[in-house]
Image (cartoon, rainbow, N blue to C red):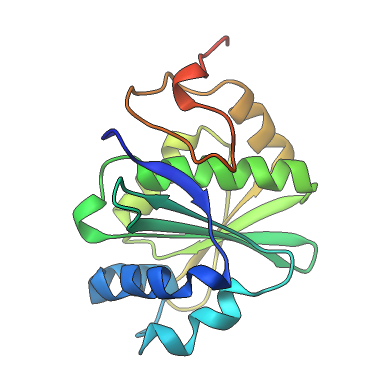
Length: 186
């Protein structure tokens, strides 16, 4: 990871920066996030970012530009996790970091299960899920999507035994724990 990156919590006040991130992403990146063609982000981000009891985390660069975002969205007692990483920042571990942090929130909030809806051909998301080390249940859906579910109990166990961290990653002040300070004791 590059120095100067931090994970910060965002909300509806950050909508212009979140919209700018969406506009910089390719149609393919947005397709994998939303599973459909999306129009102007100004038309759908407001309700998403103001959804009650949801958690929105973003990776911010040293210039305070958002380069990735993750959402934990409550849904009938469980929660959906969703990620979007700007194309030029993909394959650098940002999605994995965001998913870990969303998992921490799910554990603290007592969510029984977290799920995500992915396309079977989404190799990047499959790699992110594999790196978490969390046992997953796959539920094939009709059409081209697959739902992947994880028990929050299993997420908590995986987070207690994280893989070694790379240097250079800083957490936002709101989350208060440095990745450099985390060491694997498992």
